[in-house]
Image (tube, rainbow, N blue to C red; front, side, top):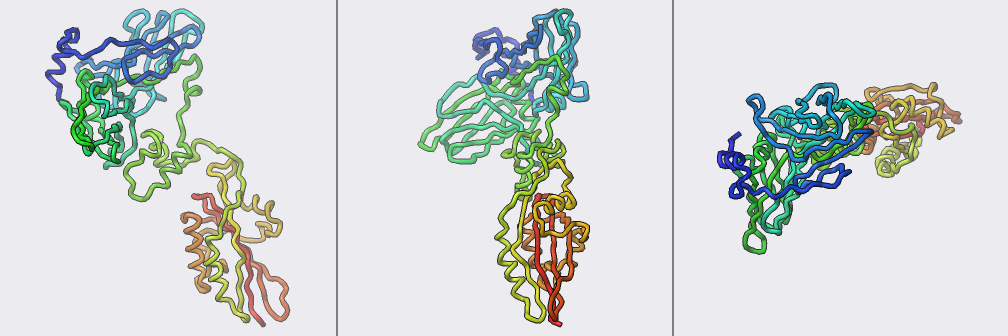
Length: 454
């Protein structure tokens, strides 16, 4: 990045009123566990005999020839050992700097980007005294605006959040929001300026990829300037500083992996991601970067089942036109008939296997008329042509296309059954078919008959 010479000169002369815009730093009340993002604060947590606090405003320094974010913490007990990690891996560097103070160092690049993108950082803390004397702290670090100065007509939200937006292999974007009744918004800084997009009459998005967001927060003493061309005429200007801030702190004396387990793909996020049109690039409406990432390439149910397998009736009347059309080709000499289709849905993550066999077990209990599963055959999509209702010779392919559209398409697991029933001077057969679509969880039950006059 460009190391801003003027900014660094100001940083070196930080105590000089003529070079620094810094205001006195207020301190939040003891017990606060979520940091205010409008001014530098401390954030506190306590467990057992230990009270721990972090300076929420991280600072950038040279460490071993590299730029690094330094986070400082204070304890009320003498410290014996500290160690920073993410699940299953050492991460960053934690070190004791005095009897009751320690720091966590995150190097610019992979370490900093990983934590800013929403991955919590764990710190093991051992103390010489107190009961217990071994703890784990969990912190979240995020980009945040503060030190707002200028026109009230420009509102810069404090939060800058990681979201999932595809751009080749890079899918991580840091996004901020600005409200201003303006035709245009220009954001300037020595470096680290965002891409600005107007999304409505008074809303603008600020997007950074990692290299730019890092440039914007290091050094944090240099503000970004917002210039708006107001829709009512005239202009407005505001400045704000973007910093790396500890936004969450928690503390436990238990097993960190049990207290804060890794989050699975959330069903609501999975449903949002799956419902986006093909070719969607921006998934910010579905959740944070890490929430969406968990659902992008894994099944929603990998996090565990949520409810017993049960059948809930749903409306399938949309299939009536195709059903009536299929019935209309029947004749008095060679007939076929399909009754109105029954349809059901099952939970997205049932406690029982999502298979046609499990579905049939529920259906036979629900519908006594349905033959026992062992009297029919289990087939897949490639064998549906054997089914009376979907035989192309009887225009069944059109009916199946309508069923696919209703149920969502994809994999089909099916059960079919046909058996002869009494018919005077004729041959008649009762036919059943049950189609299960695992991807959508929809189940359709077809009952009909076919025969011919002898």
